[in-house]
Length: 524
Image 1: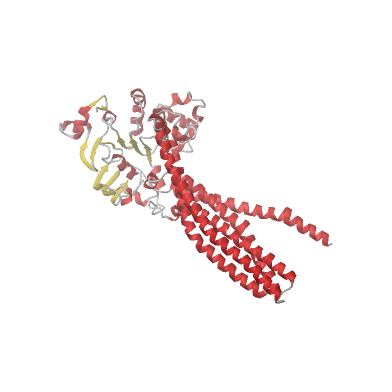
Image 2: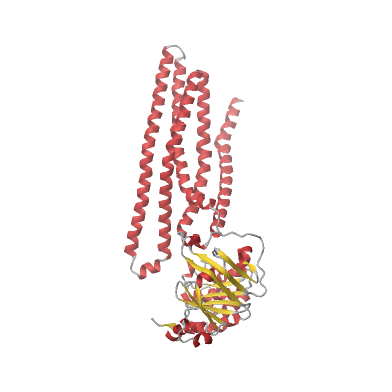
């Protein structure tokens, strides 16, 4: 009977028990990691463009992965280290209390004191671990930044320069890591000294107790054995705290991001309803960098009639692109109001606002997905026929079908497998397919050669019919046929009129720009 019970207990502990704990722990941890990844992704995608422009994307990826890994290690530490430690420690104290309760009480007090020392000693280590994690994230960010711009590195022959920069960053990380090690060696010296004193004290006490017949010789052996067990578990507490500090260090930066309120938030569930497409910017004031930079627009006003097609002209930094980003609400204005069909864009959801605007930026935004998926990004339920029709209108169909897998060809990260003109035509096809009532073209044809531009110019004109359109261009021939041309300087409108009206102002800014151009290109 006893042999049977022993066999069952061994079967449970060795075969079933730990596997059950592992199954439950693994299921719980992966569920937490899943939710954490989703929360991080949602938080990052909901951040403002200012947030992303001031962060390394590689660092954000590193921080997300570290937070997930830290969460997994945290629960592993609790399940496989802290709980066994607590059970062993409590069990040893209970056994010792049956031998000599005064000694057990004394050892319990020492254990509590040791735990307090470890806790407060770990605080400097927490700061060092945060510093090391920050250096590691910076390293990941720099690595991703250089690799994503490897063409610029190679075309500039800057491999050696970037390698030296990276060596400095790695050295900074190593320095932070060594600081952590030195800190650990200092506190562990204190811990090991206290631990050794506990063991020596136990031996002295046990010998004293035996000499004075307080306990038997056998009990002396048990006291020394269980005290050594307690001391061992207390020493393990040092390793647990070290692991905990590394977990806190790895998780710190992403936790800060998760706890920081998003500055650009929807104020209601109201959706934008565009019936005509009239746009009014009424006395808007805007300061760069979420109020920390220079004021670009001050009491700026612009009225765009429904279906009107306007061009924005001006030197770099005059506010052309910023104006379109404010319309898309990539940032909030400081004061004033931007309305579409008399609806304040700050009072509708960002998603509904951007659904009504087709945006083609100067730098095409492509994912490492198929050509088909990239074209359909703004209209994911589009049919293959609709996608191909949009590609034809954008002058992209002919080169797409010549690709290895046609519309199913993967374009590479940021579309690196395609030429600049090909990427731009796919971006234009995306806008054509989206069929939004408002169209924003920010140098949409800048990456096209003259022949390609001629192929899609009529398509763009067709696309703009019946749509409120805002076109930014340095090549003035692309905007000459628009209804109005707005000339900007330092966030102010200096000229406003049709192509003919502005040319009539011989000394005007637009007339001078036109005069300096040949074939639509600005002369140096």
